[in-house]
Length: 256
Image 1 (tube, rainbow, N blue to C red):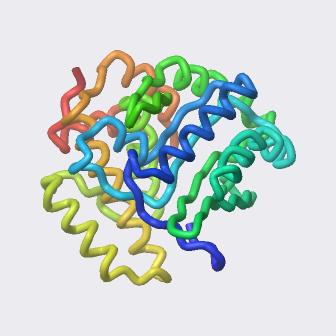
Image 2: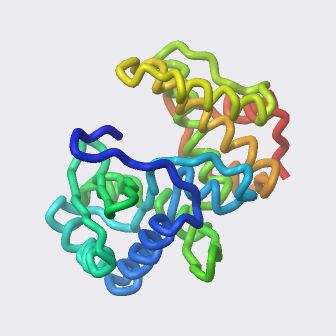
C-alpha cells in the first residue's frame, strides 16, 4: 500500500518492529476484551521455518469487532499509547476496505492493516468470523505468544483471492512451479517491477499467495474436515468447492 509520506520496509515474523506491533495488538485484546488474530503473510511466516518465510511490508490483524472509524480509533488507543511510549510514530488512515496504521521509527517502518467492517457487515459475516476465532492457533515466537489465523483459513483466504484475480485480470494461477523457483520469480518481479503497472502488482500478489499455500501445506498440513467446513463460507462467484479442491490437487497438495 503506497503512501506519499510513508515507505514500508519488508519484514519477517520475529523482527523487532513486528513483535512490538504484535505485543501492542495483544494489549488491545486484553484491555478491550476483544478476540482477534494475526493473519496474512506474517501469520504464514509464524508457521514455517524462518529461511522459508517471504518478507512482507504489512502485518494484517483482525478483531472480532465491527463499527465506525471513530470507534476503531478508540479501540486502538492502548496500541497507540504503547507504541508511542517506545518512540514509534503512528498514523491511522481510513481506506476503502481497510484501516491502515502506518508505524514508523527513526530506523524502521511497518504497515498494519485491519479490515473495515461496520456493524451491518459484522452481523452479516459474524458466523464465519466466529468460526475463524474459534479455530485460531496460539503461536509463540521470541517469548511472545499471539493468536494466528489457522492454516486452513489462511489457505481459504488466499485461494479466494487467487480465483478472483485470475478471473478479473485474466491471469493464470501459478500452481506447478517449485517453491524455490517461485521465490526466484518473486524476487525478479520485485527488482524489475513497474510500480505503476497494476497487472504486474497483481501477478506478484498471486505468486505470494501460491507460495504461501504450498508452504503451509508442506510444513503444517491442512485438516480436511475443517478445510471443507470453512470452504462453504467462501464459495461464490469466483470459487466453488470443486474448483478449490481441483487447484489444491494441481499444486500436489493433499488434505489430511
